[in-house]
Image (cartoon, rainbow, N blue to C red):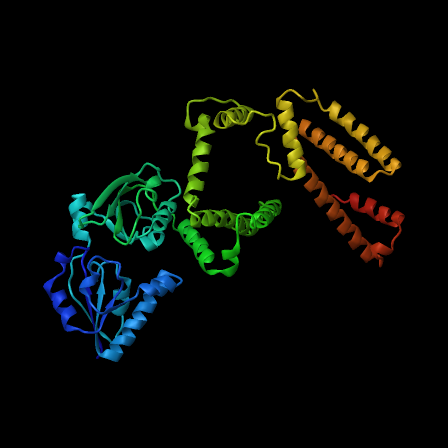
Length: 481
């Protein structure tokens, strides 16, 4: 039966490799290394490494499957091969676990010192008494889901792995203490105490970096990390996703936002099935946010964790009546506080209209500009002024039409719409919502007219205006229209 002897190269210090392992390396001529990226890799001469697999594979699962398949093929060809891995072959070595599942190949694993003994030394703890859990950083979200307490996280070989771990918990205290264990047992050993929010910016993590979490009080949210991982995978492997930029995604961000609004308008409190569309559309919108964060992370600018932390801190700061000692008696008090805090946060905004989003839909844009002007004292005292303005602007539209000047007509129609928004604002009505409701009502009535015409054997486009108006009046009398 083909044989594979698996040996471990210890935590990094060549003096910690066992004599049995050194003898096996010398005795078995066909040798393989999981990676050359290890301080003791030079002790396995003339070995084939699998570093190229890491560079080309689409996921860690495919890396492990490819390595396992190549090792099995080599064992069947050469009868006996040696496979050397970092640390101990029995601690978080997925390829060794896969090899041991094979029934047609004899797999011998030689004991080896792993990185754990050095970890217990630098942390000055007894792992049994500490009741800690050992977690693979690649699968942190899934492996640590629901766990609390002490965690030692291995395979945190890059800052993006640490970032994923950080993202896996939504509501953790950002000041939760953690320790980065870097090159433990080597001359450049580095033990850094830091916090949850800073773990991915403290040092340049590599294959000899681990993370110690002495007390995790908040369980891991596995779904968000899986979601973040998906965005990274699509960005790395999908040709369309690879081509996108912040600018090219703007249209999709707007589309998904409108689809969320559509789903909200179709919600029915008596029909739980309408939640499904809402969930789906919220997910599509969330992915757009995640997509932008993934691009920024790839550029080394910021991560989804930065986005979440920023909005969290902003909301806490703007709710002193919840998280501080400020007292409020109404929602208007809350709004006034909110605006005052915003002004304090952004002292550079000194103009009346600074900060107004000009890319907003025109009705919302008009309402916001009017609100800012009103805040500065430039406003009608009540709704009578804007109502009179509508009549005035309608007359000016008629005059512009009479003059035959298209540009003047365009301007006057804009003024008329602006006056209508002013009326809505004074009545505390959102013009966007009001117009959408009117559009929905109009659409429903036209569809009812079409249906009624069809029942009478008529086609709308062939009917006279008087006939259409008669059907319209019939439809208006119905309670649902």
